[in-house]
Image 1 (cartoon, rainbow over the protein chains, first blue to last red):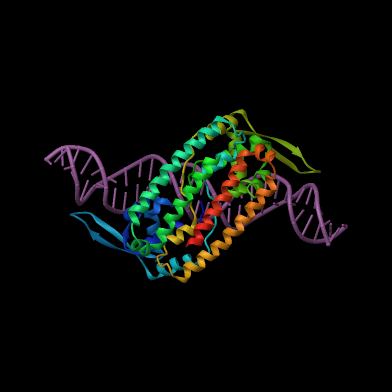
Image 2 (cartoon, helix red, strand yellow; image 1 turned 135 degrees about the horizontal axis):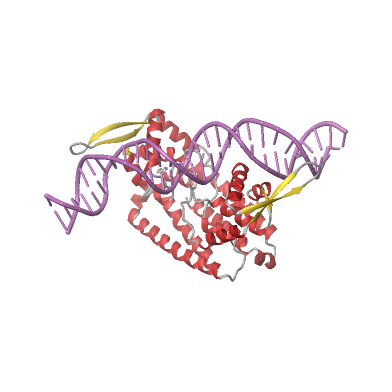
Length: 174
Length: 174
DNA sequence: TATATACATGTAATTAATTACATGTTTTTG
DNA sequence: CAAAAACATGTAATTAATTACATGTATATA
């Protein structure tokens, strides 16, 4: 694609919290981060290698059981520097690539059956998502202490929830 | 990237309205469609060529001035079929890749100066965007007739506006 | 104890998308 | 009329990201 190397910064951000293996990082995209970003292990492993060459991360080996040796990656001082610089830069604004919205753009007949089906399916989908997100919120931020400890994450989740609510309102108006 | 060929469908959708040149298509991403999707001419021209090979589009030549010959592309019956099939499919949901949100995720100190700067800069940015969008709305949909004629586009713009308002509310809460 | 599931780590092939390179014509405007 | 801006169309190099290929270990469970 030729994007702005965002995965690299996400990896740095996650390693900045604590040492992680490629597998741990991969899993992060199935849970927390996965709520708003995606990545595959087949992209993560080679990138970790490249980042190690560039001295943004290093790794130490951890023996598990009899044979298995895990590579646990750590952020280097240089990695921290690069990460903080990125945090401080103004974020790039790229478009919301929402395929539902894209499709809708091409539908000009207010009364078409296709529009009705699309909208009602989308409503169902979004309601499920909203449900999932509110559960996440209950699980992860049941009290003020947790909200403070991970304030950024809390805000992001709150954002996702209000976005879904707003999305649903809009859908119902159509 | 290995995405789902969405640009191809956008091109089909735009050609389905009327015959267009590569340049016209490119410009579409600076105006209407550009509000929520992006593409470069260096991606559009080769794709048009490929789509012509696949018989989704064809072109006819139009002489301009003395020397210049424009290629105006038309959607083929097969192209229309493919486009409508795509419209009917359930849209793929991919993540909102919002870099501001991503950065926020990594900031856990509620009182940090960085957070304050980031949020206030983002508020400014989003207010400009909201402003731009409401102007678009006034320009393009001043009356009910226009809203009906391009209902999809109208809905998309309304969505963008309500999304920005919601985004701003959320930002101000932080 | 067999077996399924989760853990763990890679590479290869392909495609999508950006940035930069490259060239020429037509129209507008000062 | 000269110059700038907009029109017009491509290619090349690079990078990002997905899907598929490939292999093996450790742990939980039936």
